[in-house]
Each structure stands twice: as C-alpha cells, then as structure tokens.
Image (tube, rainbow, N blue to C red; front, side, top):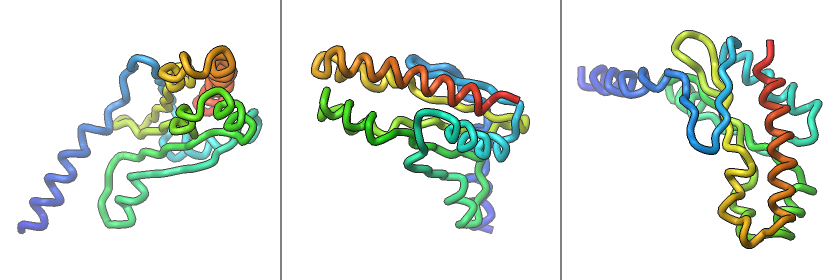
Length: 156
C-alpha cells in the first residue's frame, strides 16, 4: 500500500506538468499539433537540412520509463557545430559554458507537443560586454538558425 501511495504521489506531481509551456523572457515557445513522438522525430530531420548539428540529447521521461515510471514526454536536443564553438570561444571563453544551446521538446496533456528554446542572443547576452561584436554577430546568426530548425520541426 505504501508503494502505491508513493507511485500515486509521483504521478500527481508530474500530471500537472503535461501542460503546454508558456512563453518566458528570452524563450521561443512553438506549439505543434504533432504528437511528442512525431516531434522528437521531426527535430533530427529538421537539423539534418540545417547549418547546425545535434551534439547531445537527454530525456528525463525516457530515464523514468526505464525505472518503470511514466511522466510526460520531454527531450532536450543540444545543438551546435565546431566552427560556432571556435568563434564563440575566440570572443568569450566564459560563454563556452552555454554550449550547446538546446531545443526542448515537451508532451502536452492534449496529445500535442511544444518545442521551446532560449534564443542564442538571450543565452549569450551576459557575455556581450566581454565578447563584443563578434559574439553578438554569432548570436544573431544562431538566432536565425534556431528559428529555422524549430519552425521546420513543428511544421505539418
């Protein structure tokens, strides 16, 4: 009985988190009618035709599933490219802690999904004084790349 109550508590904790993310300062939040599973397949396809690459992935929902726990789907895709990294580091060594920049796919309670990301300009803003125009230019370039990838991923 104790175990059932604990599992119920975990379920209740995560049940509310299946709501769509709301916009936040510096974030782009794109709603998709695609299911979560379709969205996480669409992200790599969108990246494949872009100027950036997936360099990391993580999923708390996949990890929870491996432990027998079901929570709403989520996956973080870390995107970057070596020449972007070199340009960033030439401008600001400290900015390196922010790479890769991520796309965040989440499952919504209604079966749809959301793809969110912090704009590279927002991510790198704390380093602009140090990184100067070179870092600002890279951030603006990456803003366009992330916009293109995200919009392609959520498109029908």
